[in-house]
Image (cartoon, rainbow, N blue to C red):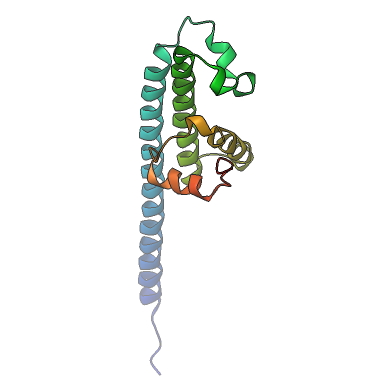
Length: 151
């Protein structure tokens, strides 16, 4: 049996080190890409939220509608229903963003547990429920929730 020389072992260790380094760099690049995509999603959500909230600024009646427990949708006049719809759309943008951040691992588990309840409460507003306007992954999550509007 032929004995392997020290230089062969050094070359093998060197090659394994290079392969390990490339794997590490690849993982770092993937993480950087996820963070960049999450940043883009966050920026789009911020633009959408800004657009939605601009028309609501300076309107003191909004605070009555802002808390969904303080009104019955049927009792609102047409202007108040528009405000309720804008607030609901704002919440959708925020919740979709939170969902995406969680799905790529950038949202802490304890915050996610709290957010899941908020998503269910938002989704339970039957009169304001969007008709499939969500990003497909978020829509799949919504479809998995109990549907409290089918009564």
